[in-house]
Image (cartoon, rainbow, N blue to C red; front, side, top):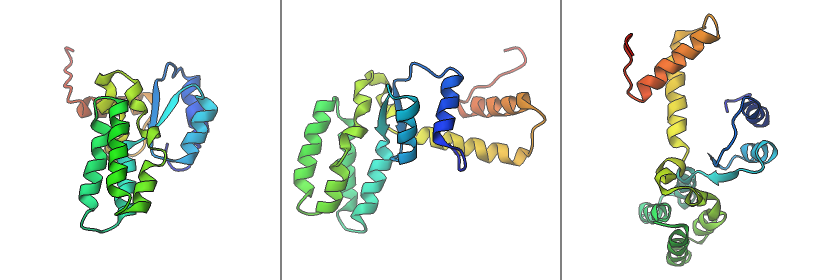
Length: 178
């Protein structure tokens, strides 16, 4: 959702155009996105992006000699073989760090289960749905590639340009014979 777009309107438009059977929405902790999801897709689980959670932890810790270790250990929570194992590792992590850095520890653990909803999906999806960063990177790349093109003649010109960039992103080469 770009600046100026209303999250609820954007999601409602996606639903009107047929986006159904969604298993999980992943985003940063934007309240606007969360409220819009509750309004438009109340039946779909939301997940807080693990990358954004770890980034917030890094900022909350500040510049210390233990910051990288603390964040690296916290990242292990999201690579466990199950939700239960992740919760066990999180409890151990909390015990280890709450005396050294109580506020960052509290901030990270608070609402942690919102970042563990990917465990409810098939394991083959976990790596892709823990974070929304690949999608953010794709959108940034699309903007960088499309902005220099200027204006487009019609909708099909936009679709061709976006399709071409998506093929490029996925390293798919098409020829006239394909």
